[in-house]
Image (cartoon, rainbow, N blue to C red; front, side, top):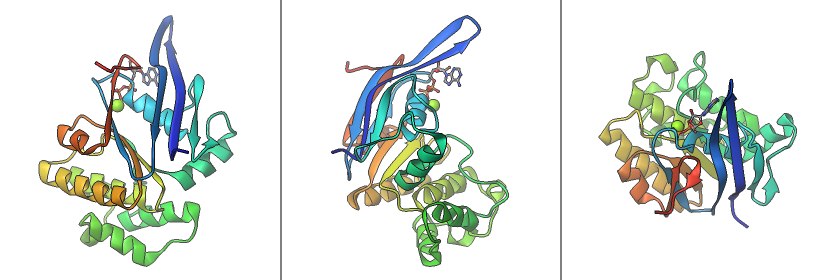
Length: 220
Ligand code: ADP
Ligand code: MG
């Protein structure tokens, strides 16, 4: 059994008479301790794939299984429960609640699956070098700090799976290598990681690379 499996996902968007087939039959799997990178040009379906996989969006056909349990086509309340317990999610934007400090954002993520652990909040912030920014609001952070805070928040509840959409897009090289080192350490500890990325440095760290083109897996 894989930590995460997607079977033949299809997703269509309609605007007026136009149809965009964002996903056309995508299957993949990620095991515990494995890092899989999704690459492909802008518009190839990476973000749609990741949203369908975490249940933030519903595929029009196909399904997703988390540790052998189907996530797709369940009532939203049930889907959110599975999502909160299974996934750390890093999106392209909107990862942090703007009216909460960095530490409060981590605390809230922990609250959704259990009890906040103050020591763990400190350790997580230290691991992304943000202990000194614990009380800062998201608007007060630089791009690199915000990305690191979002990663810490995604990992706060110690999820078995991390799904990250271009986690290093907004950061400088130095921050990127720190984020990569952090992701590698988590992978060694058993985290299953699925990420969309434009970064060669990050894709090279992956165990497998899945290339998308026009919503299909492009094996060329
Ligand atoms: P990527 O992340 O690889 O850049 P996306 O998954 O964002 O690609 O987009 C794939 C295709 O689906 C694009 O053609 C995009 O315009 C379209 N698309 C994505 N989300 C929507 C949406 N909510 N409504 C309409 N079209 C969308
Ligand atoms: Mg995208």
